[in-house]
Length: 128
Image (cartoon, rainbow, N blue to C red):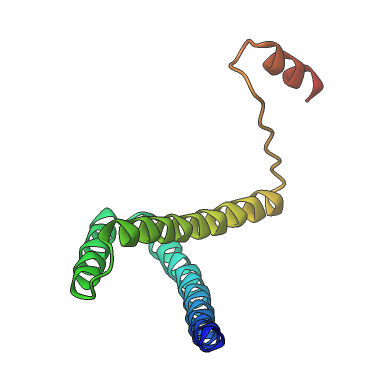
């Protein structure tokens, strides 16, 4: 009897593994789309964050979670993380684009810790 339960548990775990693999594949696909969106935003000078879109997304997903009897707290936590990842992808893209433009224009940017007049500032100013 116990070996039958173990077999059922293993079958269920295999199903969970397939779902997890699909989840990761879908997240990967979503990240690729976020990369394409930032390219279009950059061309049209649109901001990275669209608070209205984020709110609509969360409302739609929360409603879907409620309809599917999924914990709303869990869904919010997951989708806040997904949205932040999308923003990070877009920020990274724009940062790299800015760095490429600076290099092409012969600009080198130096960052220091400390305010103007601090020892860090004076040292960097003297060195550069």
